[in-house]
Image (tube, rainbow, N blue to C red; front, side):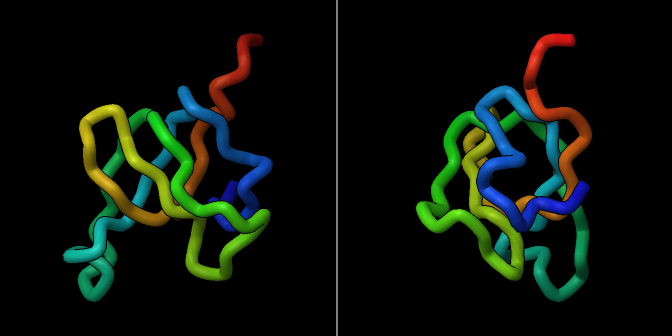
Length: 69
């Protein structure tokens, strides 16, 4: 699942993001969402989030929604 819709992402979701400095290379960083920073319901380049690690980037892929079950 891609990360363009805010409703698909919840705190606790496991995602891969692209950091600002990695936008040219396309390197992805995997982690758990702590905060959702984008306020709009969607964004063409991905919803901006802060991971538990403190890294900030745009979601490129959602591995699980953080929902139990």
